[in-house]
Image (cartoon, rainbow, N blue to C red; front, side):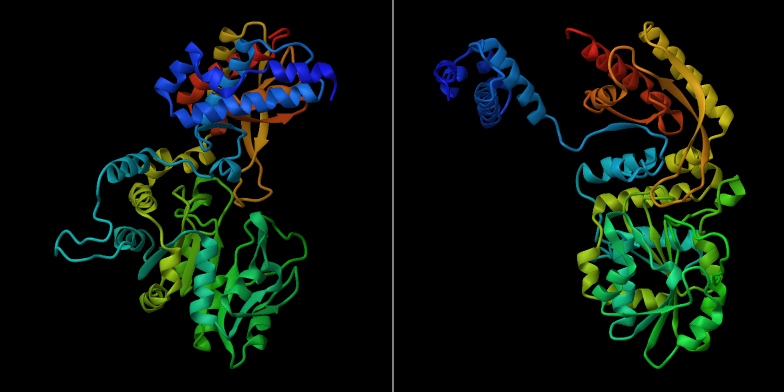
Length: 471
């Protein structure tokens, strides 16, 4: 350490001295003292590090130090988990929370959590009730299932099914369906954790019904089909439909399980969208148990939904692990409200954001993009924005490799690189996450609500100002 560094470090004020500053006193009056002290300590520590690394070579003005502390204070005061504008066009963006909630779900959560609610209390009898009963009746009415259960995600649903019905026994699955999805979730690992033995049949690209039949033995408990949510095997392929698997399972008094992954509460193909496993279709085909995610194509909160035969659901509910996998009141409130939207198909297509985004037409998206482009040009006349066609994806392991034709507002920032501008947008007061393509930032209007235009434009304007030379 040089004598100059020692002198600069000596000139740095103490935390106690900074706390006596008038501006800091105002901070303490409005914020927890511990938060203010921690911010001052961090600012001083960063200043010491800058001195020792040679980045600061002149005495640091107190106001500069307080400005650094204020930035730290703001960062500490903001919640870590906060609102983001998804401009990527990926509807079920796992990093951004997958399905956005419908208005009815948001209202239900706010109303139900603002005080107490009858989570496990039967208002008719005055006795203790079942927490899942609030959504079971909706699921049964919508799908025709005999009963239903809800757990915290579809991985838990799969594990619970295998643990309950196949521990110490075998579950037969096609080799082409031994999936791995995000977060290194692998079906064989879930099998081992459940205590079931995996029995692979067929090949990666071709499995036939006789492959299942030849593998059945006295240890077999379950025949399982798993939807390959995030990939497709194409070309010389063959697989077995759930109705054939279910018929074979029932012939041998086994349980047929259909793990649909994303799952869909309505027939998407009727809307011109890529076909995805439809929950009711699987049940009608004879599957004894069907499981899927609630926060993907269904457009609800994160959870795993299990539908099927009443006696099997009762056995699942009796498993000791069920308590560890159960969902809380916020999930149930949001799920019930979302399911109620499905009572009317037209209402679901308009009011459930996931479905509305997926089915948005090119004409609708083009009109929305032109409106956003005009507003951006008005706010930032020195920047150049263009409306362009592009492609996006459903995301969340749904509709893999199926491109969704979309429309974007494309922008190449005038004063900073695209990467730097992307960083500034992410760190804006209202974060904007966009995609970068062809050395330009693209705002995909498929996933941007019109009511978010004002916030997006404010964030873009702030980022442009911050990126100006000399700022």
